[in-house]
Length: 86
Image 1: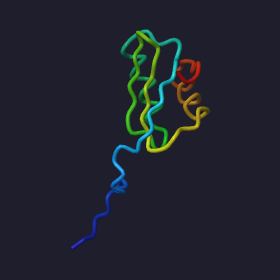
Image 2: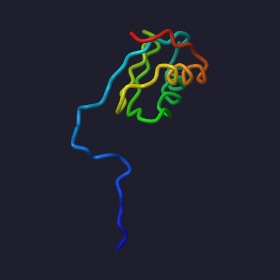
Image 3: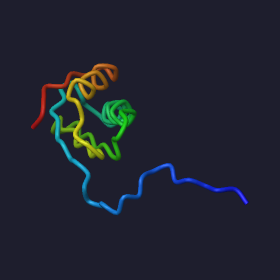
């Protein structure tokens, strides 16, 4: 038998995630939303991303507060501009 370890942490502290909303300029369509979501999702600790082109808002849920500069770099990589937190 082989021991298997969970890739995630199970601390029993469900609901302790942090949600932040950012304003991003330049998103105009679903492709834009996908590009921004994909880049931000690659940041360690991010559990979900929802980008809405219509409002320019990106909601990010993570296991701990994110460094805004890391989010900015990801948005820049996707080809858009992070205005800041909402």
